[in-house]
Amino acid sequence: MFERLTTREETLIFKLGAALTMERTVLVMLAEFEEHAQRDDLRELFRRHTDETRSHLANIEKSFQLLGEDVVGTDSPSIEGLQEETSAAIGRADGSVVDAVIAAGVVETEHHEIGVYESLVTKAEARGADKVVRLLAQNLRHEEAALEKAKAIAKSIERDGMGFSV
Image (cartoon, rainbow, N blue to C red; front, side, top):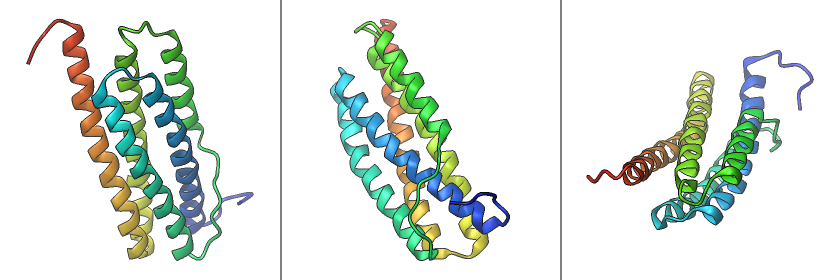
């Protein structure tokens, strides 16, 4: 895409491309998480968030178009690292703790996604790209809601595993 980033606009496009790659990777992660999850509430979270993630991809693609740019993904090593770490942990997890491992990976991933969208919204706001801001802010709200649901499930898993009840 860019050999060298020389303008703030180029950084927005570059980061938007990284977000595109991030969301494509998240779709793969969600399928893996759903496959290994034992709890119904986790599997349901993944099914809902898969649909949202598809809408996130559409919003990112529309953002490229609104900015007059080609839709091009760029490297996203952070999400790839989260994917590798969580996949490795799932592979090592005993069945009794696999949901705890998955929930932790989801919480970490959602935090990353929130940071990406907060940065993109700030960049789009500064550029005065109001339609892009609305699209990316919608993605941000979905990620924040998914994080809260994932944290609640993670707490329940941890409490259940410790023999505590609520």
